[in-house]
Image 1: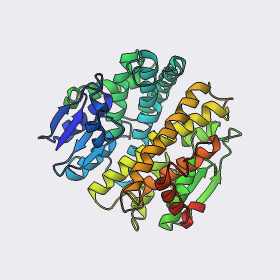
Image 2 (image 1 turned 120 degrees about the vertical axis):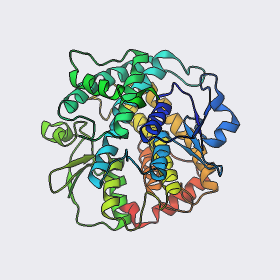
Image 3 (image 1 turned 30 degrees about the vertical axis):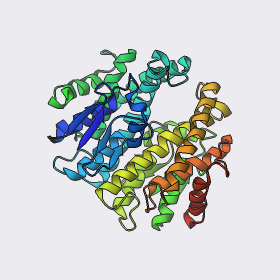
Image 4 (image 1 turned 90 degrees about the vertical axis):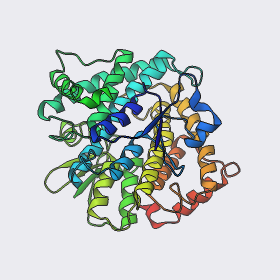
Length: 204
Length: 204
């Protein structure tokens, strides 16, 4: 198995943290420099027409795009230490929080990054004011997250899951556009983030 | 079980089509008028702090937000006629295409709707030019979709899945902002859509 990736991209980090938590080894990583547009070649688009990273390529040539699809596939191959939940209700809670990690945080952080920094200005139209509004929405979500983590060790309760991985990758990526929780206002969010950062997977 | 929903919302239709395809009956539907802001009360936000529809409420009071989390939960309760895939590779393909239904189409259609029509102007800042750009991205995606459906009966191959449900709900919702595939340019997309619309679930 190969994973095409750009190490700095948050969705690539999600997959690497997942592999580290599950102790999956032997996956070959192939760097794709998205800053230089290596993901926009015809060859790469045959792996994923969206030209996104990461992409998992199986030994039979099958390609699977989308980080969550990659993680679900690997969860089935390596069912030990499940990270998508241990029963139906927990799996639903994990899915709900993983989607909140994406739609409440990652989308807003990502749009703030794309529309205010101009990192991809060679390949998209930017709307800086829209990007700033997305940044404000991400900041407002930190309050909600702090309230939830006051009563919950992890996002899905007492169980570390892919939702925590997704949320912390989005949160850490927010630093690039100066979106940071406040130590005063978000003590529970800080406690959770510190706890996650102590796990070896945080450096994956 | 109860499902809080707003019948016109595409994510609510996704859940109803899913229930119809699987033949699940006996779920109580509770209408929530999001146009009038019934989803923004403290009471509703206790079910989902995002105030989104649909929300599934179990008999023990547990609430599950996010349409995909609801569908996954119901898939486990009613495993007959699986709609998330039948083996690991197919499940990965379904997940990948379900996410493309969301990120390539639903997000763009939704942003076009929210930012150009002002439907939620009482509760959000709108950026009409951004909305128009999202509409253009949705239209460009129809070409990609048409190419894929030239060689595939359904999105995940020869197998009808939640990805088809998600994509057709996003596609049909696009009519609201006049985003329609072209009969000339997108014959395969039209063939697929017609086939889906002939299933009883399309009227759910």
